[in-house]
Image 1 (cartoon, rainbow, N blue to C red):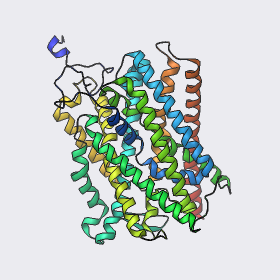
Image 2: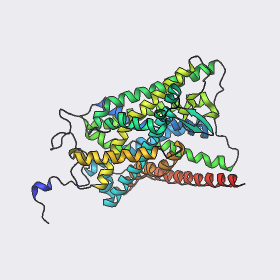
Image 3: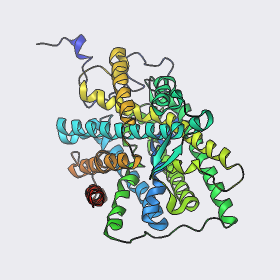
Image 4: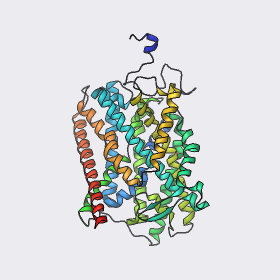
Length: 454
């Protein structure tokens, strides 16, 4: 069938961005939009990075010991900057405007589809974890056989509307649904700024409490090296790698943020500023949380803030910490959801008009994804398991394997020797760490089953 020219303009190559840029020929999805600012982009990028990972990092540092743990956080930031730099340079060379378009340029349709699938799996896992933590904060959770109450349950008691399911449903309808309805990522700049501020509040309170207790001698300085007592404890060290990798995943939002900038040449500085800020927050959170709770640090450190901290106004500070971070995650949610929706739409409708210009498709995809995430948040029992699954598979692929593979493929002949060396290092670390983590998970399950059967 022949496609007339008027229809042809509504077809788009998979290389073209899934969402229109600020200079698209179509009518603007938001009237009066002239491009995103440097500060707005930094807030959106930082919010993409500092999500639920900050809550799981203290447990990872507990496993590794303080010195190896903090070193791994810094190395994770350095590797992430290298991988993002590769993505941006090879994107310019390929004249594409999306991550999937870049991978499609190097590996064709199958490569593009695999990348989009990995982004969808990674972001779905991340958002399920976000909702789990929100549920933990509001309604409470069980950890190692101990009940940790949520703030709403503490304030109002156990009622039908303080149950986990009810609170997550209300959060979804009243908070998340409006925020995920924006069609441009820059529309989230103010909520992103607030989410960053709330993360800083969490760090400041944790640091203040830890320093107070260190000065009065009620806490000891944390363990510097890993605690190895048997073979299982050694293999458990490798399960921390996916947690550390997942903490820096922001690659899926690089292009949506860059495409909306007033000056796209600022993107490299935006990435560096965001990574410097986020790694500082991660280091401070991990250090002071481990200092404060030591070997009692839980997989989700927020659960530690439902007990007496041993200082004046402990209960008040507990509530501030949990509420501020719960609200922070509600504000992080839409920025991660944004690229999830774009990539799922690219998988399902690769030749349709941009989703921002098709309201029916936009709201149908949005509602379906939100429903799936809501159900997942009520059935995934542990944040640690969820992070290990997404971190060991899709997140490592999105963050390191795909950028390294594009550089090694070098379709446009711009890769340097350093690029290729770093690429091989990233692939080796990604594959070996994910293999070790998955093997460790299997080993732990088998060992637990043996203990249960004996």
